[in-house]
Image (cartoon, rainbow, N blue to C red):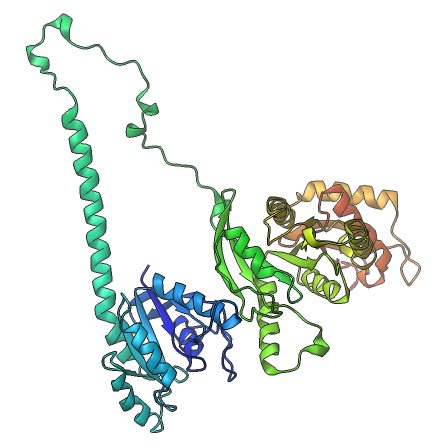
Length: 500
């Protein structure tokens, strides 16, 4: 797919332009320079041009041993995979020495570079716009990403490059088809020619008894549609800062796709990465670490927290990363309860297991905290692993698939009502506030993801919480839903004699 990389020094409006082209607020935008650290990809459109756009970190000169250097490596990767680069400058600030330095580098790039003078709304950006001609990157495109001005000029600059790319793609595809055709013709010509008209009856070759349907050349059967592969499983990696979330995703996909490092809080945006494992498609979401609410001080951190919470709401499976040397502290429990309240499937991953000082004590503490503090979802699966060394990753993915299957489980209505009758016979419903015994008439599963059951009964407000927990525990045990959030909705049945 045609790919456009947005590059430039920090705080020139790259993420704002990215959001404008995607039509959604995907990237975090803030006045603080250097907000973007990982490269973020999105599907963009500009009039009739449909392409992939990549938001990158600000261009800075630094070595790979520091965070800025690792961010620069991600930008270089995005530039090497793109078909065209948009270099943004702040026209109000004019051309800075850093802009000129990177313009000199980009002039040698193997792909076209379009110079974009951002923040050109009003008259304050005119001096910087005219000054940008000196950068040697051709005519600049005046633009205001925040207000959406100048997009038609950007379209005119992109269109020739886009059309040339699509024409080249069409030519490559036609050449591939022609090459395949010629190869087939050559293979046919190599077969011996038999003139059946000149042969005697006894010399005519006998029919081949083999089944032609087994010949791959003659197999026109359609592969069965697998509905499980229709949509990728959305799996969010969450946890406190510096627990190894980005390292885990890099190890899973086998590529340094995300910026990692010993510094806490490297990740800021929720970055999505498409991946396939065991024949199933996944969309892995790396999130910013969630700190305690009292420690979230500035507005940027609030935006990061909001982005992470949104990733949890959109996820199907959430992997809560723990540090093996600080297993299940108060903040970890808060995050786990948040996932459960949102109704997402939860898997706990105890990372840095190779560096754990006391493994037996860590496992005992984890089991105790799950039993006492998360009793409402008893049976949450947990896996020990080392994201840095790549140990335990297959067990993690097996646990995630199993949790996802339970999260999608559906119980037939007839079976559910037979189970419900048995539960009530074992422990009858208590008396209501007015001395009348409560009665559950019937129930059904209203929805999945998470499993939600509607039960119709008399006076649901009088049902004690202890009986709700009794039914909840029975569902988990009898229908193999351990560790899955279950919602029970009690509805009052209409009394036909109330209006008589």
